[in-house]
Image 1: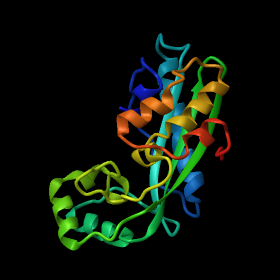
Image 2 (image 1 turned 90 degrees about the vertical axis):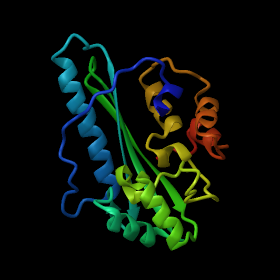
Image 3 (image 1 turned 60 degrees about the vertical axis):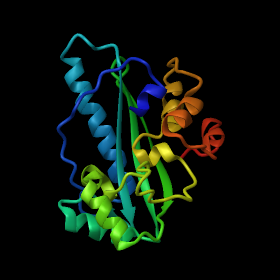
Image 4 (image 1 turned 135 degrees about the vertical axis):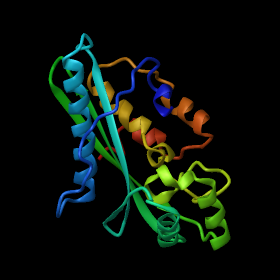
Length: 210
């Protein structure tokens, strides 16, 4: 789990919120709303327990192509259609992250956007990838870290964001809450995902803040 590169001890909670995009809602607003609603939902459950002096971290990631939000494929045909749509083109991956302090009632959030250029894969490659089952629980029907399919070999940007949790951006939000973190987050992240990140220094100095 990516979060272990930033925080050693945490618990994972599932939240039951409506993840339907609202009519006319911008994708950036949509993903930020989902992250905040997840944080509040988890916080409400924790407030009713003995774990009250805690910080809730929530995140949501979506794939967007020409302002259309692409969800998880419903079947093999849908997965192939989505991958065909993205083939040899650039789309956006947006992550909303939220940090909620139960003690203060404060919430901080940020939206992180990464441009992803997909390679010109073949129909045979797509079929083999779909047969593997990997696309079915992934927004956009792909995992950027899948070595066999390797959807975006020339990728530049926050790899962890496309995987679902932009750690360096999250560390900035947590530092604003005066929380102690592992200072080696960038090194640990790169080691765990086996990716040499070209942007982590700009992110951690705040140059890439949204």
